[in-house]
Image 1 (spheres, rainbow, N blue to C red):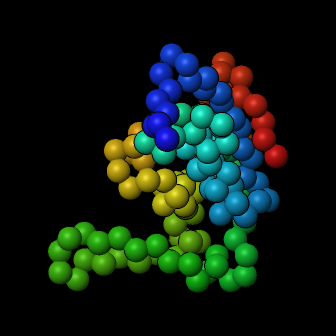
Image 2 (cartoon, rainbow, N blue to C red; image 1 turned 90 degrees about the vertical axis):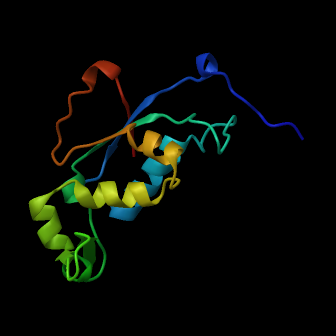
Length: 141
């Protein structure tokens, strides 16, 4: 079986708009990750950037089920002894409204150069407005 290489000029990129208001955070993140990778396209290749651009609005209004709003924790470490800092989802959303969505999507992309490049193709906004009207994004449900 031959490896498929799609030439950059043959890649058709589209813009999609996802509204996260009232939807589970993980469901929106999965949909965005699939679109970013290009897994919805028949010419998908795991080693190439074939995906589309994704705009996510109302990221701070995404839902979490159960008691996750108060029990879900985000950790970061300064690199110094005793430098572990932990924050709940509620505090994180108040401080950085888009971080939980960014964190979820980044975790679903490859952990290499390709994943870092793909993450640049997602634009996340806390509110309903975005500056990408000129790209005429298609709204997805």
